[in-house]
Structure formats: structure tokens, C-alpha cells
Length: 310
Image 1 (tube, one colour):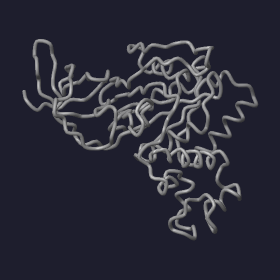
Image 2 (cartoon, helix red, strand yellow):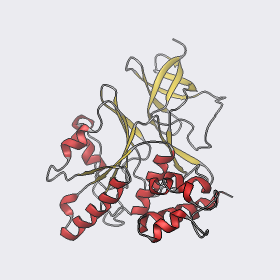
Image 3 (cartoon, helix red, strand yellow):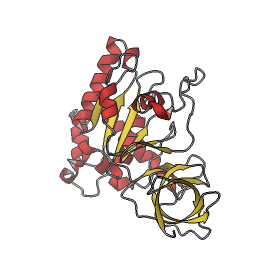
Image 4 (tube, helix red, strand yellow):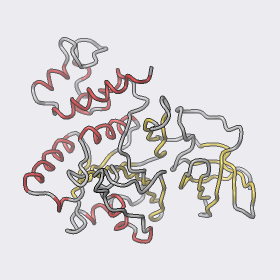
């Protein structure tokens, strides 16, 4: 039974849960002399990875991972603990669903933009889900609709949800069929509650928002992959409170902002960084109000942060 194909469903650091093609689940670890190709990361294998494994101990159902099948894409963030290293969040993803809230807790647009840039860099389509709509007053609702219009114009999918009102719940459930989806967002935005509506049998842990930090309590530490149905998988990433952008050169950053990408060829200098250069088409668009203030600020913020790789 050597050289079987499997799918990484869960990672706990050194051990991985691997689902065989017949649906059997094994516990696996990396081969001792595992040669790594690809990004420098604290975790060489991630959920969504397809691997070749060999059975090590049939009685205990343990296997050894011998090879990672080349990925179609992956999502990576800066490692919180190791400078200069990344942490792989997921591989071979068809779409990402980013859940955000205006309050309890508040998701900043800067955080959303960092996620969108990372997804753009790896060509992963994103739908933005504005959750907990029932908590908003009229003014806050208007604010959300304004955000939604901005991102919809940039080509992102938009959905408004509220569990108490059953708003958007059917549409949310329908988004997953036949795809590998990555679900992301701050801790406390309601990902687990929404997921439990999609698949009640999973019974994912839901924790109350921490009053102390209003940032939510981490309910997950490693990404986990759930099988929702035939060919339908969901990757629940850890509640991310920081998202450092990795593997994007400063010169390329504007390519991952759709509204800037459309103007890049119009700048006077072909190596324009769109910060203070003369005759910069992107700066002109920003000054004319064609590029949102929040988006340009996110561009600057990511640009400046990317400088800490020296």
C-alpha cells in the first residue's frame, strides 16, 4: 500500500490527520529527511495539502508523509513567533470567505485589506460577509452599505448576515457546495455560529466574546478542514488578530489592489511606487477621489510594514 494519496485535514504541529482516498483517517508525521521546496515556513505542511504517504504502523493507523503534491495555491501569513518566517494557513483553496463585523468586535478595513491583498496575490476569489447586522443602528447600517458598495465595485462578493434574523443564512449555506473554502476573520465575529448553521453535525466550539479585550477568544489554534459534503470542504482558520503580508515585493504591491492594477501602465515611471513620484496615475486617481482613502492608507501601511524583512 505504498505511495497512497491523502488529504491533510488537521494539523497539531508535528502530527497531521490525513484522509485517504477511501475516506479512512490516519495519523501522520513527516518523514525524517523531508526535503522542503517552497516558502520558508514554520509549518511545512498545511490543511488542504494533498500528499503521498506510506503506512508505518497498521495497528495504530499511523503513516509517514513522503511527498507534498504541488499546490495550486496557498495562503500564508507572517509567523507570530518567528521573524522572517511564514505560517501556512491553507493550501489548494477554491475561495475565501472573510467574515467581519462593525462591532462586537470591530473589524478594521486595514485588516480586511491585508487579507484581500494576500488572497489576490494567490489568485483566490473572496466573498466578504458582514455579520451581526442585527446589532447595528441606522447610521452603522449606512456605514456598512458604504463599505459593501466600495468592495463590490472592486469585484468582491458581498453578503449581509444575521443569525437572529435568519438574514443571508440560506445564501451563506449555498456558498460552499463543491468547493474547498477558507473561512477567515477575527476571533468573535461569528464564524463558528455561522458554520454550525451550515453543518450542525460538526458542532464547532462557540465561545462568548471576551469582554476584557473585545477581540474575541481564540477558539482554534490550528487550521482545521471539515468535510461538509461530497467534494465540499471547509477550512476554518484560527481567529487571526494580526495578518502580516508575506512574499509580496514592494514593487508588486499595487498589482494586488484591483483599482490600482487598472492604472499601473499610466504612471510616468515604470518603477513608480505610487507614493511621491511625479505624474503618478494612482496618486492622481486618489486625489480625484477615484481610489478610496481607506484603501490608499492600507496600501501605505502594508508598504511600510513590508520593510521589516532586512
